[in-house]
Length: 111
Image 1 (cartoon, rainbow, N blue to C red):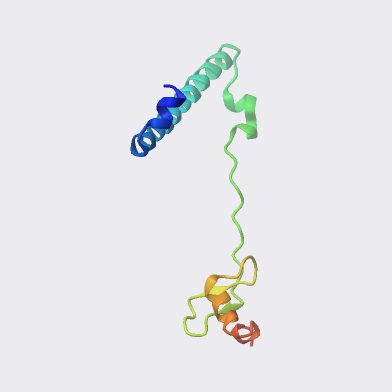
Image 2: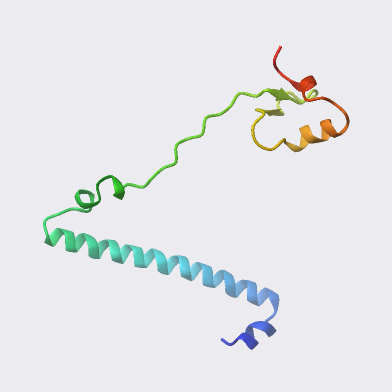
């Protein structure tokens, strides 16, 4: 397919082509990964090793540690389910209340 053909292709057809290409790409990557794994395992087996023995901890999928949830420090005056810990960006509901003139201290949960 040429660039000129892509430039004149209807947008819906182009979107469908992109989606098909993404799907095909994912499938082919998965197939290649599986093939490589089989080849590695066969090579290691012929040498008397397993994948776990060679890779050890590096072969295990890394998981991110869970973030600690911070307790809320501020709450919406009319809806106590809307809270904010004071870390990160201010939520939209809080920003709106502050723009109307309320103070952050007036929304504090600390007594």
